[in-house]
Amino acid sequence: MGEQVKEEQRIDIVIPWVDPGDPVWRADKARYSGKIAMGEDDREIRYRDWDNLQYVFRSIEKFAPWVRTVHFITCGHLPPWLDTECPKLHIVRHTDYIPGEYLPTFSSHVIELNMNRIEGLSEQFIYLNDDIFLIRPTRPEDFFRNGLPCDVNIPNLIVPVLSNFSPIVFNCVGYINKHFLKRTGMKRAPGMYFNPRYGLSGLLRACLFAPWANYTGFYNHHLAVSYLRSTLDEVWAAEPEILEQTCSHRFRDNTDVNQYIFRFWQLASGRFVPGTLHGKYFKISADNRRILEYIRGRKGRMICINDDEFEGDFEAVKKEINGALEQLLPDRCSFEK
Image 1 (cartoon, rainbow, N blue to C red):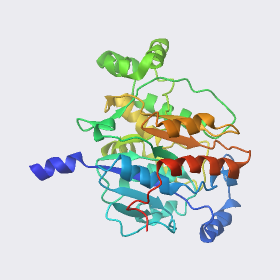
Image 2 (image 1 turned 180 degrees about the vertical axis):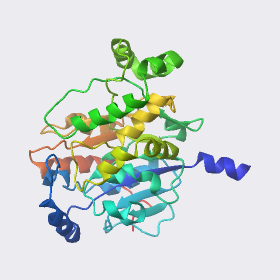
Image 3 (image 1 turned 180 degrees about the horizontal axis):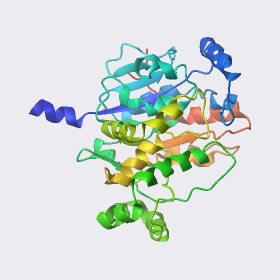
Image 4 (image 1 turned 60 degrees about the horizontal axis):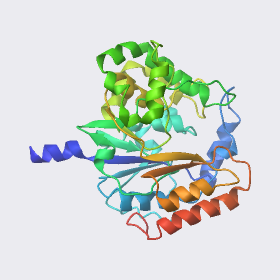
């Protein structure tokens, strides 16, 4: 029984990564780029490298030493500094878990939607993009409690903009409304919608959106997401058609859904524990003083640094941000050679 309890408490991390400088990968990408359908996104800006992945691993080792395994997803290439013999590292190639008919893929959606197929992945796992860094000590209870993911169920309004992201979120919410009625959930468990852990802004949003019987959207915090592997299995069983359709696209497409459908499903079904936001999302710009202050002051447990298609002096900003991360995490970790 003791071993069974330990197994149930195990928490893994999943990190997807691509090396945009890999000549083999670029050749494959170029071979399929000429076949892009309307709505698919293949811009170079999607693939540029920040050269700071080592700080993600250092932050995990320093601030989340309780993590069992880091499942590192790659199409096959690896960072030259990565120690492939590290006992806590599981290298997962696309061919290891994504069905062959969907490969090769150049879409993060395909990589995300099939995470439940990763061999050895624990029931409780954290999805971490490679632009999210832990900057303070964390506990398992920050991500899971009583076997359920910790999250914030804060409503949002989807605003249509001329990008490939807004339609994808819209698609995800549409499938949630197909299976769940917000008004029913609010009556059944009001504390999951109106909760002081969400802060004043979250409570105000809950009140403002309460009259709508359906979900108008969910607040996306762009931080680490806690998942149950069984949730992904459940969504695949309920909506295989849209997931298979998304996986058939080599590149992102406006008709896709992404991993948000799993998070929204957990929130709408009540398979979560109300929590708090443990970090902050930033978009880089020409002036990044707030980002640097957040890192140096360790104001939260994590930070997401997203370039959001920044078109300024990228190399200068990269040097500035990476310098702050180096100050916080200067020591090489067990994931590095």
